[in-house]
Image 1 (tube, one colour):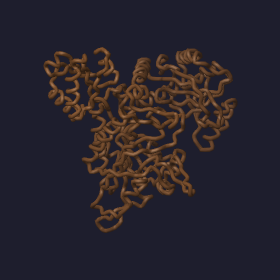
Image 2 (cartoon, one colour):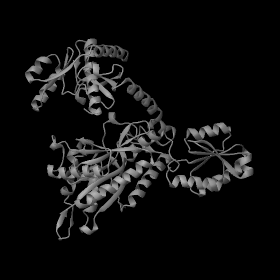
Image 3 (cartoon, one colour):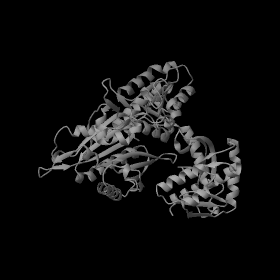
Image 4 (tube, one colour):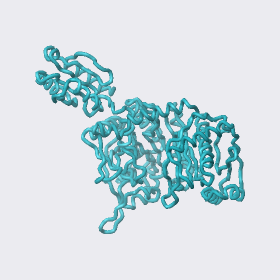
Amino acid sequence: MDNVEKLHNTRHTFAHLLAMAAIEFDPEVKLGIGPVTDNGFYYDFQFTKTPTPDDLKGFEKSMRKFINQKLPMTGREITKAEGEKLFTSQPFKLELLEQYAAEDKTLTAYTLGSFTDLCKGGHVKDTSEVDAGAFKLIRIAGAYWRGDEKNQMLTRIYGYAFETKEELLAYEKMLEEAKKRDHKKLGKELDLFTFSDLVGPGLPLWTPKGTLLRELLDGYVWQLRKKHGYEKVEIPHITKKELYMTSGHWDKFKDELFRITTREGHEFAMKPMNCPHHTQIYARKAWSYRELPQRYANSTACYRDEQSGELSGLSRVRAFTQDDAHVFCRMSQAKEEFIKIWDIVQIFYKTFGFELRVRISTHNPASPENYLGGPENWAIAENMLKEIAKEKHANSFEGIGEAAFYGPKLDFMAKDAIGREWQVATIQLDMNMPERFDLVCNNEKGEKERIVMIHAAIMGSIDRFLSILIEHTGGNFPLWLSPMQVAIVPIADAHHEFAKEVANELELQNFRVVFMEDSDSLGKKIRAAKMEKIPYTLVIGDAEVNNRTVTLESRDEGKIGELTVPDLVTRFTEEISTKQ
């Protein structure tokens, strides 16, 4: 058993312990489901007397009591009839039992002490294997049964759970740090983006500073792509229904499409992605194999009708910009193109100090109805991705069921400064869309040959990437990326003339300068620059005017000392050119 499975089993056991505590609190409680989450577990209940947050301590006490009893966990297969007897007073369990039996799934029940639950398993052998100090119940929320608002509202209790108490404490410490770095908080403080009730939820509005950040990041990605032969394209933001009927998105993406009916009754949709449009740029003419690969890059907005409850800052929005690219090539060229994109991803994320590992996202063979294309195509595509990861000596793992509906992908996972992992870049091999749109080239024999398509996004959503980057850096952007790079602080009015001379010289060199000429004290001016997280502050007083120098203070390193303006320009230019 690996560590991931062991932690999963521990958390799953804590969910059962929570159910036992709930029964002790309310013997008439009806039990929903109790799955594992990324940081612990939850369980859904229908109480006859609803607990309050103050009751959670009592629940924890009961759970620790059960843990200390070293109760064994045993599982067994059951028949539907046995299940109906076991859960006769549990309507939600009976509903699940009916569904699983209809789907011909194996039915299993797990018993912990005197408590038995309908469960597919994954538990510790007994409660002596879990640390009584390694969990914490954190909140109570409402949740519809099975996530459907037409169903009954249940009470959901969430908990954190880890292998050890030390890991729990470290996680809570990380959460405190995450609050300070929250991109919603910093975005407002640094004046990067805003939201408007009149515009609507999930529709971010970017300020001049935030827009500059987006343009600099997008420009950097383009700089890396241009070296590999990419060309820019542009597409409209809407399309006829027929494009998505052909691509498969009309059915697979139907719940997330913003649909439009024209005055003439034609059905259109706002694009949730760009790949179907890009196929039509390729399809405009016949291509010789000598002209491939064709590489199209396009940073453009996409729109998805996300549910209101799922929207969160820049992390989950309804309108976002993708730094999207698609490569149209022969299958024999796909591996080389994948490696080129991989190299771009590595350079880009190394610039910001992210650690990367790679998920090889494959399809779930048990659910073929969720995917386009036959098993032969999927096997070819997935094997190629595994081969690339092996050749790259990557820190990789397989994610079964994580593939896109049209093909497998490499998903790059970035670890940030406080240890959280985020899915960022993605490279996807698509053998299905070229077939649907009949995309071909003329090969050496003059015959039509089916091509493949590679989807590649380096940042993915620029908006979401910025939410990650803001929290990763705490808003302390590197010099090349900072909306304001240098704050110039004259100590008194007598120093303004030389300070403005310095400001003008730096602006001529294309540095982004803010001149702090208000009447506040020197200390207040410097604090204001630090609050705005400006990388460098130049202090100018009598000595600096006389010596025609500046005193340089760094946001990250503190006071550096006196420099001439030419030395300053050299220092800043080198730092920007190397993207330190």
